[in-house]
Image 1: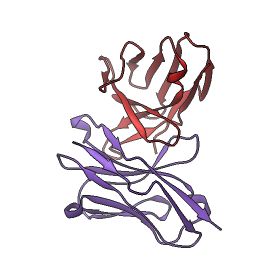
Image 2: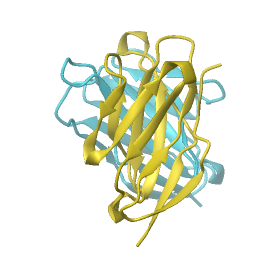
Image 3: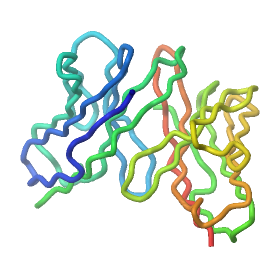
Image 4: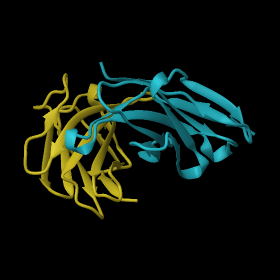
Length: 115
Length: 117
């Protein structure tokens, strides 16, 4: 079965500290992986995506993620968190557009940032 | 990036009435749009895939007669919640697929908060 697991429902970090949000997936084909961020009452903004090539991908707002096929993981990292990073983060795995383009989302991780 | 709008952003209706939500891709043509539902503090659940000029494909468990989807043009898809009931109250989010060489991803609308009294 295709699924995405984000083990951490809620994480709190201090401003300036490093961050890692975990994501594990189960997918029958070549996975296309995404990280989105959602502020309260808003839609989703893409942080970064991985289709192929270099397994360490850089995104917006200083985020990066590393694809590890052997671990079926796509963890999101940021070296220094800012208070404005407080939001809900979703990992997603999907099919390529010519295979329907559907996305499967993880449960989300809520990030709180302490001053 | 590409922009997707939704209208209305918030709607309150009485039980038994129908509500239409619009999803527009403002600066690109989207042959495929997706409709999601999100409950508070939960993830997005795909309801249906909408392809321009053809019938929508609904996910298992989603009532197609209750959630009518129309994708009449390359920039507009609509979701109509028919005979709405309080349990239909939720946050509905659409996305539009931009699969041009420069993007190859879905762009999400800001969402519509539906409250059924």
